[in-house]
Image (cartoon, rainbow, N blue to C red):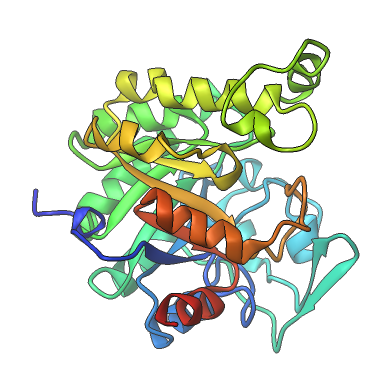
Length: 306
């Protein structure tokens, strides 16, 4: 396998447009990915589901209503049903924010995206999962098959919150660069119980309030148990979980680290959208992350150029 471009030495983090360029086009659409290329971004991150008939499509939500206005579930639909959907011109981004776009957009197939942008953009292919499901493990198999078919392995990394998908991805195509993803709310209600005990002393605990859940997730992430099982060479991490030695620990294991999501527009899953994002960006650069994912890649590019 040829050298993967995510692993090339850079003097700054790789900039990935999160779901494309959502400031200008709807998320996970061909128009958004084409705009990323026109803007000269290093690459993009996008989300992938497998339909009922095993077609891999770009889509973020499992439920289709927020993005299309039509009730449905991507994994329970066949491709001919998904093909008829259109991504709406007006999208709810949370917190009362509505983004308005020029026109409706189609839902793309992963295969056509890999065909179009291999050699043009680096791609973080997130196999979407809100919880691990054994029944969806072959999403990993199909994604691996499409990467082999399109000869795009040198331009992609594959990430997921579902270790079954990642295990079957590597089983189908050993040596692909993949890794588990971590966010600061993945403990769910259990995380709230951590806050009932005295705060654990850690670098993260210096932030205001009880940060036990975040400190615990940082510990679990850096232990990289899941990564060792699947043979991970990458990890995607919500920036709130990264402290000053996280990147060094992963680099010592020959694993690259990505941070998300800077300058978020979709705030549905953001705990605190008042954080100073420029400070976050500077901290991620200082810590040495390998890539950053952002909803406002033009701003991040301008800040790095400055």
